[in-house]
Length: 419
Image 1 (tube, rainbow, N blue to C red):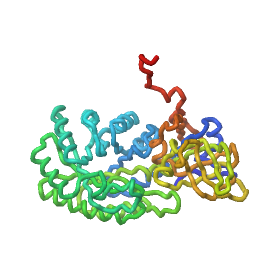
Image 2: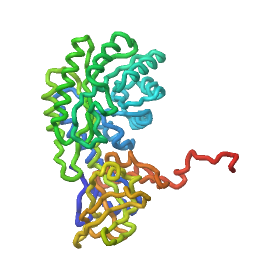
Image 3: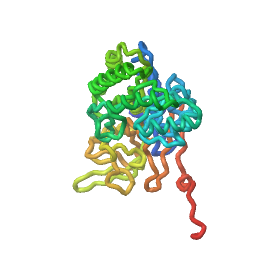
């Protein structure tokens, strides 16, 4: 559920007109609903109220510090995959003891930063990484808590680019080898403390069966580890719960919660979750202005001031995002492509879509853009990145200023011999 709706044919975020925001902030801009963010966190938290758990929001989905702070204030932790995300999380007020560090390619300086910060644990993705953390922890005279990301070889039934739990994926360690690494670390890597098991099989999952299959295999791993004397206090289930972009029937967190609780009953662990998309996806929209329309013999085009550098998902995954007119029109819909100004044929938001007959100057809202929208944006074609806005009730705050042309060349220089 979200709090974007029409009032008297005008589109609103909570109690603020999108038209008003666009007039004051400009376009393109991202708009997030604070009420939607807190509602989604509460729904997830409520689903696991009867068992020990920690919700570590996945920073990669949307890393704006105002968004992070919203979840942190609600009691959550964060899941990070880089030193930069750790920096953001701390700046947003995260408790280090509620931070888990995932990702396949942690650099030495990033590991050192996390150890000095005192995070809850590392989710380790390779034997070499395990040994690297041990070495760095020893040099710093610290102990590093860790879980191994176990690859259960479960098909998540999602887009292949966001599948992470199969043997052919780059993530995690296969089951038998993972067990061997736990035992080896316990007996030989004295600067490491095994405290958990991590399992994350993919993103935008709309069925519960892959989660249950992965849990069944992970439960066997935990029992095996305990028989080897490895104490397991945490089971990190990762994220991956999907949302509705078009007609997906994504399970509600309460159904997911029931399935997970039933599957882990008797394990005596604290459950960790890393939700990202399900928390922020439908809490954000991208607002764009129509620049031109063009009629061809085979296609109608609506050309807007947002582009694939602002929201990459349609060009990257062929993803569907609903498109709404900020001012409702009663005229008959047309079939058209919505495209941006970038010099790529892949620069589109919709193809052959039935849409209102947008005209130059009209505003449109590209829905479900809160996850992997701004966080994946770029300066391709030297386009300044969009502004970000947070709505709370009848007020709005610019939580990221629009980039300027001057920002585009920050840090660049012409060598002296060419001046």
